[in-house]
Length: 280
Image 1: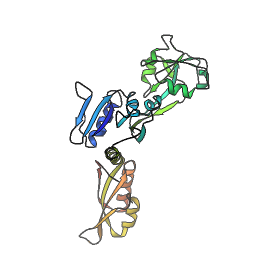
Image 2: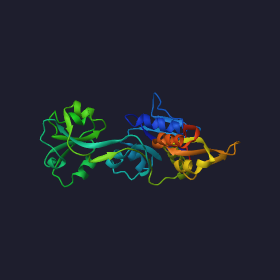
Image 3: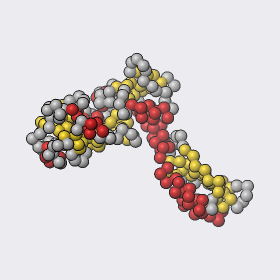
Image 4: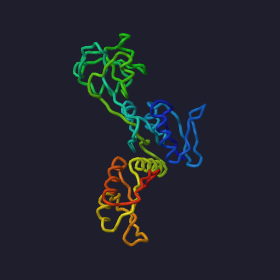
């Protein structure tokens, strides 16, 4: 049995569900309550606030969980980062009113800074004389209400800041994405490894596609140079002794260029398929 924490709402929630379902887990947030049991895989899923998950992991109450790097850093958690995930990308930026004279991070000295990430902000501006105004949410409204001179807040598209009359002042002070974390002293390492292996396999599958094609023997070496695979392409002799069938994994972002080259080379019956899961 293993306990896994997932964000109960927000931009991390649905990508977590989609990822785990694609890895063969049965998981959904119940209409009432914050607990779901996957009997087949023997996992207890707990739906918690994303910024609380690092605390549960640090104390060993939860074995493994997904949350943002920003929340992990803010809580100064000692949970172990097992795997970076390709979603939940965001950045912490300084923002001020459109009419403000604040133009870069060096201008922040002596100002009141509203944020939900006081530790990250404090660490970043430790040499600056600033007053941190800690808020739980709705940080962007604090400037117009006179509580702060500027904010440091999560920026994804920038639309929320813009609607509040704010503009981003400088480059991000912190960049974040979702990650899979473990409790610092796990007691069920094999179960954790199984989750890591499944998720890693799914991420590999999302990065690669499978190409299959028939190649004349005289151009086989050239074709294999285009599709070397991870170790080596799979090659099978066809009934016609002058032809071979080749199968290989290729990077998804290079796939169509490779197919063009194979066709120009003289290969036939070129097929490209998605990979559902991979174990490398």
